[in-house]
Length: 227
Ligand code: 6PG
Image 1 (cartoon, rainbow, N blue to C red):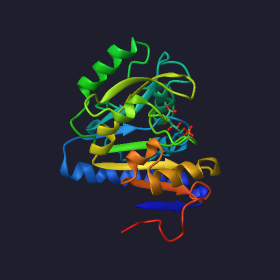
Image 2 (cartoon, helix red, strand yellow):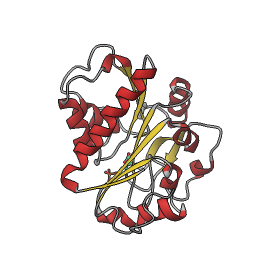
Image 3 (cartoon, rainbow, N blue to C red):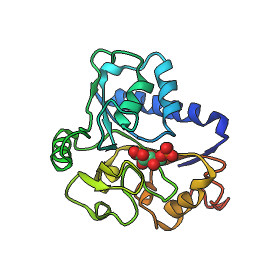
Image 4 (cartoon, rainbow, N blue to C red):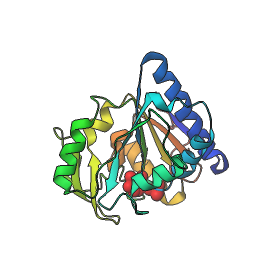
């Protein structure tokens, strides 16, 4: 489904989707495997999740869809950004956090991360760049054609350039997927991802997309939710 919302309620809508979906997963499973998006769009969403009580963190395992190859305690690290916005201080008891080790040799870090991934992620959150990248799958990347490896080292086109990313098989196999996109500068990327598949974010086209009006600005009004 595609949801277009006013930018003033974007974070609330995203947080509500995540909270509801975690509850749905935990009605049927003992544990929820939640893979988080990097970048800045989701940070207000994580702050709202942090404020909401009643999330059974002890039954959640957190993963990351991508990571920059930088130390975990630097602002460029997705892990650092997520953890400082999702938790203020020690993480809740029982929560399991699987960090991509951006400080390690990338090939070894990718192999190590792949070994701890669940067969399928229950919930996958993604952002989209104005060039249509998602996670760290950038236009022209060899990782876009990868069907065996589930985590790869890549050179992105958005600094920091050396990164780790999950590959399309991980995205396609996610049980539930939310793509969060804000801003008119991404409207063309959103259109290309949803209408003609010509950018990497098309790999997530069958998921739920939460868009603000500006990001949805290039979509046809009628073809929003194809049957
Ligand atoms: C990253 C993200 C990346 C991000 C997009 C959008 O590590 O940067 O994984 O895919 O989601 O670049 O970033 P913004 O939300 O900051 O626009």
